[in-house]
Image (cartoon, rainbow, N blue to C red; front, side, top):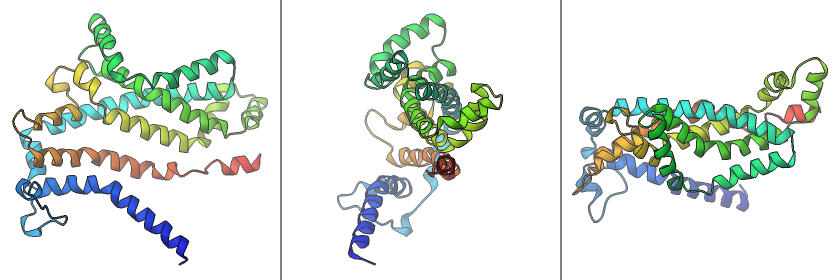
Length: 276
C-alpha cells in the first residue's frame, strides 16, 4: 500500500469514527446505567456486566412508542410520495423547458429554502385553523412538503440534465406523448435521482419537529420527534429511555437506506449516455 493510499484510508477511518460516534454513544447511553454515562470519567467501552436492554422494552411500556412510529410513517411516507411526484415533474420542467419565467420560478424555490420554517409557521397555523386542517395528518403532510420540495426539485433537475433529450425525442417520433416518453424512457434512467430524492424527503419529514409540535395537538396523532420530548422533564431528563427511543427511531431510516442503496449508486445512466 502506498503512502498516499494509506493516508486516504486513515482519513476515511477518522471521518467514519467521528461521524458514527454520536450514534455509538446514543446506544451506549441506552444500554448502560445512567450513573455510568454521567460519571466524571465515563468509559468509552461498555461494561458488559452492567449492560441491560431493559430500556428498549420500557420505552414501549411507558409511552405509546408504537403509535408515534405509525404516525411518523403515515406523515413521512405521505409527504414524501406526493413531494417526490411534484418534485420530479417540476425538475423535468425546469430541465426541458428553460424559459425565463420557469427559471425564475425555479430560482424562487431555492430562495424559499432560505426562509426559516418558523416564519411560515404562524401563517400556516392561522390558515389551518380557518380551513379545518389543524390537528390533521393532511395538514402536517402539506407543511412538510413545503420543506422538501424545493431542494428535491433541483436534485431531480440535475439528474434530468444528464439525460440526452434525443432519447425522449426518439420515443416521441415513435408515437409517444411527452408524458409517456418521460414515464417509459426517462424515469427508469433517473432511478438514482429518485432514490436520492426519496431518501432526502423521507428523512427530512421523519426528523421534522417544529411543524409537528405546533400543528398537531392531539396526543394520539403525535409523531416520534414530538413524543420523545416527553422524556425531557422540567427537573430532569430520562437519558436512558430517551436514547433508547432515539436508537429505535433511526432503525426505519437505516432499513430504508439499505433497501435503496443499490439505486443510490451513481452511473446508472452511463450506458444510455455512452449509447447516445
